[in-house]
Length: 314
Ligand SMILES: [Zn+2]
Image (cartoon, rainbow, N blue to C red; front, side):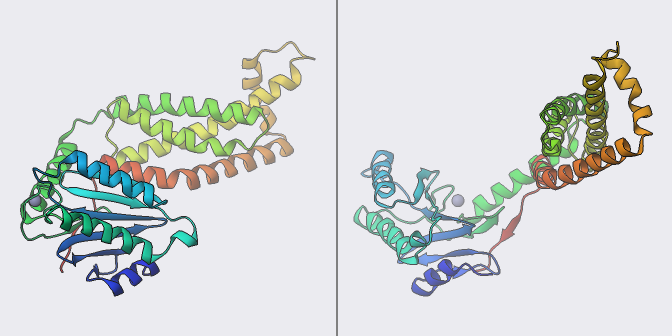
């Protein structure tokens, strides 16, 4: 669905939507402008070249003035050859196209007054731009820069593919990480909270450990860390039950924790104990899967340099 605010901006400027993306791009009053929206944030890119009269200090002072004037303009910075703004209107009263339009007009006025010209956002060359989508951000860059960035991504992907993969080290690291996560799980269980929320901790620590000890987070890395997580969630439940048994019986019987741990299988033959154990385990797996899914996906995409790259036809 198209962002309503972007629709209004498109109607009152020369900016156009890119296919089905919530992103506007175009030349408005002689200046290249791109605006992307993600929920609650609008990213505005305004490539413009500094001059000998107007340097970084003047630019920063101007941008500082902008953030003071517009309340929800949370970020304003000049990077490479372009002004980057993040406008974050959480409330309806700030979600108005007039506000973004007035920000854009300030940018244009400042540029015209100071004879700043539009350019490639990356190299600053005053040439025709060939904007492209990089993950979810549009980069208004020239053909050369597009090629350069493209090559860089290919290089990184290539380097990842040829990176050595120490699966054994990764498994050791994954277990160490997951063990740390399990400590959190067991701690929460002992406080009588639903320990399953710590499933994310097990999953994150496992993946971090796997990578730290040389494992590559490719598809088999995902499978291995998932299996370790499944095992450790089971063990965390098992140990939690042993701790319960130990604290219940240590007063009347002369047992240590390891006796309790050995007694767990006997206790699990008890239907009531078994039922609650299985229930806890299932909830644990469910929570862990639900909480970890987006983290695992993100970690995998990052590790593999999977980048959404799309040329924009204007
Ligand atoms: Zn360029």
